[in-house]
Length: 635
Image (tube, rainbow, N blue to C red):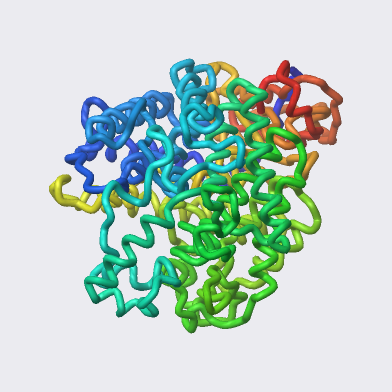
C-alpha cells in the first residue's frame, strides 16, 4: 500500500474532539446497559414468553447497531460482547419456541428485516468468523433451496407472508384470532381488509361476528407472496458478500426480476400480493393492492418502499446493474405524482406522532406530503416521504435523476431554523437532509452540531437507565430498544460516508472502511477522528485527525462503496520543508510548502501515518469492479 504521512495541526478541530468524546461516551453507556439488562450468557433479563408469532425482532433490536459501532472504531470488547448477546438472545428465543435452527420459525419480512440487522452487522464486522458465515449460508438457503418450502421456483414466489425456518406458515397465527375494535392501538391504521362483507368501518369490528369474520378473512388472505418479502433478498445478499455464491446471486436477480415484471404489467407500480397460483391480486379479487404489509395496510409506503429499495440494492450489488433500482424509483415517483403541500399538523396520517416529534414546531409549516397508502378510495394517508428511501437510491447510484428526486423531497420538508433537531427514533435515522446540506457545502457546521446532538442522545439514554428501577418481567418489550445508548447515525454519516442502515432489512454499507494498522482490527484507531466531506460515484474526500499529543497512530483507509470499491488513485495534501515543531524560541512553528499530490495505485487501500497532533486530507478515486468475479474479495 501507499504510505501517506499527515501534516501538523495548528489547533484541534472541534468536530474531531467531539467525535472522540462520542466514542468514549457510547462505550461507557454500552457497559452500563449490559450490567443493568443482560445476564452472564448475554441474553436480556426478562422472561422470554410469547403468546403469538410476534416479538423476535424486539429482543434482537436493542443491539442492532453495536457491530456498526465496532466497525467504525468502537472498543475492542464490543465485537465479542455483541456476539455473546446475539447467541444469548438466540438461546432465549429458541427455548421460548420462537426459533428453529437459530432462525425465526416464520413471520413477516417487515419484522424479520428488523431482527436481522444485528446478524448482518455481525457478519460485516467479522467476515472471517466461520460460525457466523455458516449461519449466513444456512439461513440464506431457507429461501434459495426449494427443499425448505419457502420458495416456489416454478412461480418465482415466496409461498406465504409468514415464512422462515418452518417454511411457509399458514395464515397469521396458528389459530384464527378475531380482529376486534378492542384493539384500540390499531384503529389508526383502519381496516386490515377493506372488502369483507358487512364491514365498512372500524366501529363495525365491535360486533363479535364481524371481528370473527375479519379474523377469518385475514387468515385466508395470508397466503402466497407479498411485496415486503423482497427484503428476504438482503438475507441472501448477506451470504453472497461472505462467499460469493453464484446461486445466491442468481436467486436474487430472478426473484427481484419477478417483482419488476409484475410492476411493469401493472403500469409501472409494483403490486403488493401474488396468490399461490402466481396471479397478481388473486386473493383480492384481482386488485393489485390489499396484501399483508402492502399498499393498503398497515403502513404502505414505509414497508413497500423499504422492501423495494432493499431488493433493488441487493440485485444491483450482485449484478452491477443499477437498473434493478427502477422498481423502487417508480414507487417513489408514483406517490410524488400525488403530492400536496400542507402542514403535517393538518394531516390525519396514521403515524403522524413520529413526524410531530421529529419536526417539533416546524410541523405547523407547509410541507410536501405524499400518500403512503392506496385503498378502495384511492390514495390516502398523507405525510412527508421517508427521506431515507430517496437518499439510499442516490447514495448507491449517484444518478442525476435520483439526485433530483432526493432534492425535491429535501426541499419539500418544512422550513426550519434548526435543521439538526435533537430527536432519535428506533431506526436512528432522520437527519439525512442536514447531512446532505453539509456535503453540498450549505451547512458547514453540521459535524459539530450533529455530534453535539448525538452526545445528548447518549446522555439521555444513560439517564433513563440510571433512573430505571422497573421489574424486567413487567416492562414493555420495546423498552430495551428505547434505552440503547449506542448511537451510530451521525458516526455512520461522518466516518463512514453513508446514510443510516435501512431499518427493515438493509445491509450495512459505507463509502469508506478503516483499519487500525498497528492493532490489525477494523475501525479507527484510538485518538483518531474521521470526517467524510465529499461523496461521488468515483471519488470520496475525507479528513483524518489524530488528537493525541503523544502517540502516533496509523490507519488503513479503503474505499468501501459496493458499487465502486476498486481504488485507482489517492490524492493527498503533503508538506515539504516544514520544521515541526520548530525551535522553542519561536512564537510558532514554521509551516512548509503544502501541495496536493495524486498517486496512481492498484492497491486496495492506503496507510495513513498520523504523528501526534497531525491531520491528513485524502481523496480516494475509485472504479467499479466485476461483481461476478468470484476471485475478488467481496466488498
